[in-house]
Length: 401
Image 1 (spheres, helix red, strand yellow):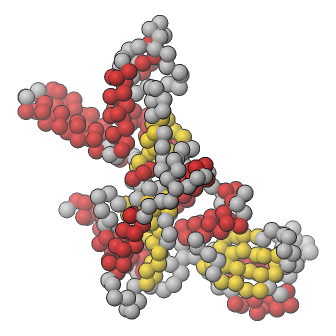
Image 2 (cartoon, one colour; image 1 turned 60 degrees about the vertical axis):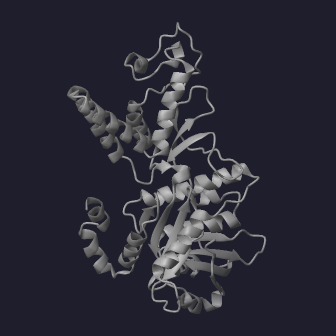
Image 3 (spheres, rainbow, N blue to C red; image 1 turned 45 degrees about the horizontal axis):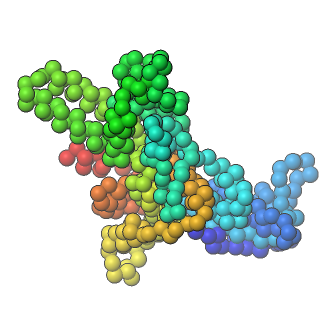
């Protein structure tokens, strides 16, 4: 937990000295009352000194602005080096201090994800903001894929993606009635139409498994299958079929171009967010394991007392996070809410514009060298950061090499 690690007592008669001791920096701050029964006041601000001068300064009788001068007795705060760190610190402290209303204070809304509900006899893919987990905190009852910036963008991606699968899109209860008229998708041969027994249960399950594999492998299963079919058609000199498959591949590539890199199977969402810390020459690491934010880590690059190199230190931290075993949680509902909240915080930062900091994903392994290069970019002076941003990114150069 990112605790409020600094504090000052407030006395109105010594307010000038109090304000002079406060940093004029971004922070999360808790103002405690003289009355122990009163609830404290939690804020986040871009300039702590200026904000508290407004809240605790001499009130203006003609102003209706909130003033806590007679309320405050103690101020505890934590300086934050980035918007992401501030949002996380505010969320964690609000959850600890106000367990009943912290979601309202942090303005948390679950991020939309795609779900294939495998508990249904005839599953379909749909958008939801609710994730079901088991006692180990792992998503269950189906495959979850996301998060997305908004429901509209999630629906747009799902609509294009489902064109490659003949899975139903309707919300009706399937009764397999041969007299049922069906829908537009069944008439266009874009659905196997289990509603009027247009396929067997086994045939529909095969198509659902294709969809689940597509989501589980982040589209690699379908892409590989289409490439294999295209090569086979070319070897058999069936160039018309090969051309049709090639157009499907191009269409699939267009669909994937619009997919955010953050969106993937929730169980496979392993990443690390890098941010500049408040301390000089220090980078803050915020690891994400299976969609959940892990304990943060701060690496100071001028600390010569450490025997291990920077890469070894980063490697130890990320491997410790990746190999950690989540303890069983009897409160499944609370565990599901925590996963949803962490995804919401991550998506809010990732889809913000402009977005500060950098993020790297773990596929087969962590890109350690690229992570260290990003650290040097974050620690560079602001002028140098702007010049580097104008140049082609190293990631693009490496991928094109």
